[in-house]
Every structure is written in structure tokens, then in C-alpha cells.
Length: 209
Image (cartoon, rainbow, N blue to C red; front, side, top):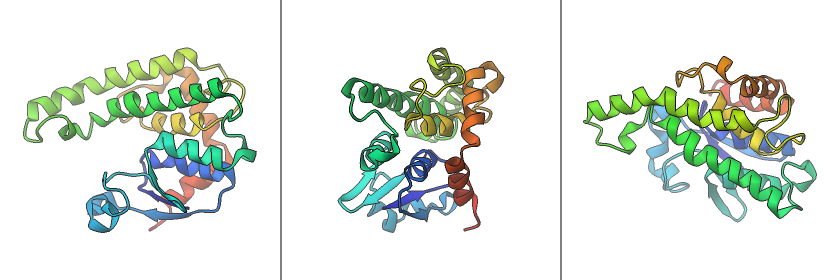
């Protein structure tokens, strides 16, 4: 497997999951400043022009919830998801889908408003940016409400939900949200940061190119 990533993106969630699973994989770093994600070489891999993408023996996967599920199912011994319980696995998928479709989209309004309005519409772009602290905070409020103190997203068992939540929670301050207002998420973020797999993934992504 080969993971296409850029530092400080949601690719970190899949990267952590690969480390947790003990997978053998390689990395391809994309430089967003050089617009690598829009170059023909990468568009041939992922026509969406975004990261992450995971090249496997059967083809390329995109979208973080799908990649996380693939890692969990490919390495069942790592027990990264309740694969033997359809309802519990659906809950994992529901949570990761919420992060993907709601939390990440709210965050993206801060830097990528051009996806929703014309890039030249400065007033609309500014309005979306002003809304980000509120929309991101409200999205995380739902997670905070259901997160067990001192536990993991799905309760007492670590799953593929946890690296995804950790990755998006890394952006709270930049989105204008005080983590102190989300104490359970802040605690989760701190505990995740101490996991060896998380440390290895972050170190690899921040290593000099």
C-alpha cells in the first residue's frame, strides 16, 4: 500500500490507522504550495485532486471513512473496529461519516470558500469565514456531548474513529474554537498524542522532505 498525503491534512487519520494496524506501507508526500495535488501525475491517481489517497493491490481508495474501514478490515487482528457486529460497525461508520460530511466541511469554509461561491465574491468568502468558529464549535459540541470521559469515541475500545477525531481536533484553535470549552475532546486529543502510533505518524509527516 502507498498513502498519498500532505502534512496537516486529514490524511493523518489513515496514516495513524496504518501504524496502529502494523501495516507495511509507503508514503508519497504532496506539496500543496507547489500545487502537486492538481498535477497530471497525481490526478491520474486521484482525479478529485485531494488527499489522502491509498493505493492498494486492487486499486486506489479515496475518502477517509472508506480508507479507515479498509485498514480495519484488512488487519482484523489489530481490532480497530467491531467487525463482527454489524450494528456496532455501522455506528463507527456513522461517526466517521459525520466527521467527513459535517465537521470537516465546516472547517473547510475557513480556507476553501471558493468551493461554494465564486472566488471573486469577497463578501461571501468573508461571511463563511466569520461563521467558522460557530459552525465548527456546534459540530464538535455534538461529539463532546456523547464522548465518554477518559474513554474512546465508541466507549471503552479504541477504534478507527479515534485517529479521525484526533486529526480534526488538531485544527480547533485555528478555526477559532477554544479547546477548553470542549474538555472531553481536549482530553481525548492529549491522550491520542501520547500513543506511539500517533507519534510515529506525525514524525513521518513532519520529517524534512
